[in-house]
Amino acid sequence: MIKVENLVKHYGDVQALRSINFEVHDGEIIGFLGANGAGKSTTLKIMTSFLAPTSGNVYVDNLNILEHSLEIRKRVGYLPELNPLYGEMKVYDLLEFTAKVRGIEGKNFKKAFSRVVDQCGLEGVIHRPIADCSKGYKQRIGLATAIIHDPKILILDEPVSGLDPNQIVEIRELIKQLGQEKMVVISSHILQEIEVTVDRIIIIHQGKIVANGTSQELMSGFHGKVQLTLEIKNATEENIKALPEKVANITLLNESKVNDHVALTLEYPKEKDPREALFQYALASNWVILEMTPHRAQLEDVFRMLTIEGGADA
Ligand SMILES: Nc1ncnc2c1ncn2[C@@H]1O[C@H](COP(=O)(O)OP(=O)(O)O)[C@@H](O)[C@H]1O
Ligand SMILES: [Mg+2]
Image 1 (tube, rainbow, N blue to C red):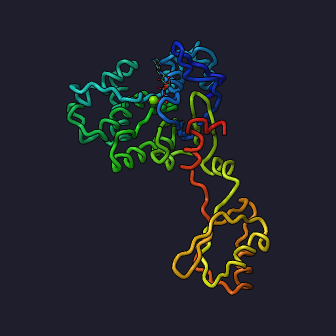
Image 2 (cartoon, helix red, strand yellow):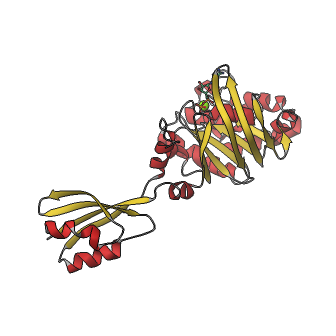
């Protein structure tokens, strides 16, 4: 388990992290989401003990990051944001070098090598210089170096950013597979890139955590109101006007005429679905219903609302 406690980081005058708290449990895949400059990379660098916090602490399996940074690095695999690889090196040589730095040599290296080649699908490029590999392969190679020591925790900073849609799907699949046996934290500034991969989403905005939950939890805690489109024929002005009185819990937001029918936008509290009452009212008024569609808030709306200027406080 990882526990992030009251984490603060200042770079000179810049307050990058303003006391953040969250936990990640074994077996979880977490999406760490926030706009550019929100503080994602700073948090991940501190969690991997590459950067010291100004104050606060991180515990990895109850080990304090300040006192046990070496032990923690053994348990954690980290893919930094720009995935810095040595282009002129061949894939095999890079993996051998990375393993050696971690003290994995000889027989142990052979084992680790075939494991990561298998896990990351690198068979085709083992003897190729990294510079000649595609962006998708470079990302796989980065992942292979991050897991060469078979860590139980994997921390990936924007692992799919800059990839084309097919490569994104491939790397997502790979991360999902790795997530079956490891705790994974993936950061991104684009919700859609990680939404389908993760179990839980933590949103950071201007150095503060503004949301933490499954996508369903984030949405349910957010929009209390549902908007509904109702398209009807044969309606008179009077019975449209009477609608909010006759059907409980609805507000008429907008009315527009489209050819021979009327489109209404109605709003109601999420827990008070008025569709049955609407149907009955339509029947009693001799309306023909052409469409009745509730529009639920999308996770995208939640993310946008929480990460626009001042949005988190609103
Ligand atoms: N080495 C640094 N020196 C000064 N400011 C920095 C440094 N690294 C990051 N920052 C600032 O800290 C804030 C958070 O940055 P970062 O953690 O990289 O955000 P993210 O990864 O979410 O884009 C930003 O305002 C950024 O400009
Ligand atoms: Mg970053």
